[in-house]
Length: 421
Image 1 (cartoon, rainbow, N blue to C red):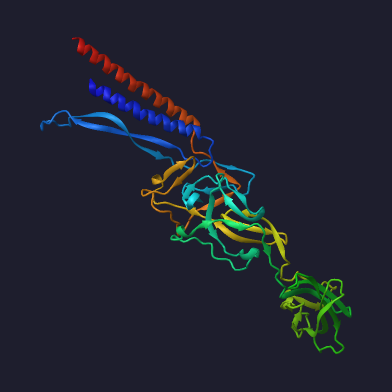
Image 2: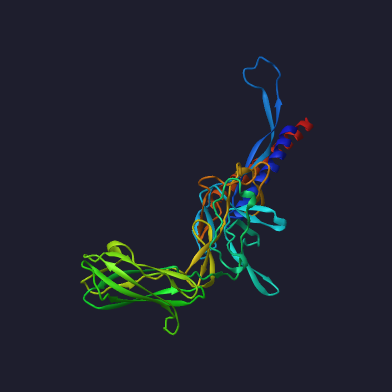
């Protein structure tokens, strides 16, 4: 009878823990990235009823119940669209975002409701940091191409190798970033120089090192002396301001074509575009510049080179790469959000809400050599707690609690009757 009371008491304590776990699950049914837990029970003690060796089956009696574990439910929550480009979700059930908290303590979460937080020094905006709602830094790989507020074309590889987890850092970017001017190096021309006309003029835009949009002007005139077969054109090439007020360089040459109009060659040299050399490319064969009896259609393609641009925004693409976008229409990768993995996700230690920390049971965070994971932008992972399932389990747990209390009452009545005999 005393044993039944002890078993009932241990049941009440254990089922109370189970109710607490379910209550916490239900309370976080709308928490982004929340992972619910389930209570696992086991027998508290085993008592041998008989030591006789003649029994076919064991003669043991279980005494009480204990909470064996509160196991983490790792099933993925449903994904929902959001209007925020920095809201992120991980495709698949494996993988965690990394956060750097106070004193650089590492946390891990499936909640990707991030945003860019402005860092000011003396009321001057200096950096933008990708952070969680608590202000913890999101960690990943920096491209190291934004030094001194100038974007560099040299980008560090952003491929994460299995041993690179410890080298991740906070994703912090300059609030002001300039895309540097890239002077044009080549201008391409194509089309048809009609042999029915004596001259033609074609222009193309070229970018100078001073961030100028200059004009490359080609003036074609039929050569006074024509070859026996084909056509020959004298060409005068000029680099100048768009209004023609300043001429930076002038080069002359001859362009020849065979009897069917295909280019044979050009002697036009390289031009100076206010400090940058520019070559003229007429293409090859029938795909470039030709000369025939058809109407004049020659034109210049936009030359390579980019004007200077100012930062418009930072955004996150589908692969988790942080993209900087500029006023000149250009964009560049400046970082990548990391996705961490563990040998035993069940061993992660819950901290609060939807954050966890590594433990001896989970092992250290790692990256996979392949299929490391995919980040989805404009998406959030919801809590994986099913409200109807949790309420059903709560009713079952409540009934179990009631039954445990009944065993105490029954044991007490039996003990009372025994004492009155």
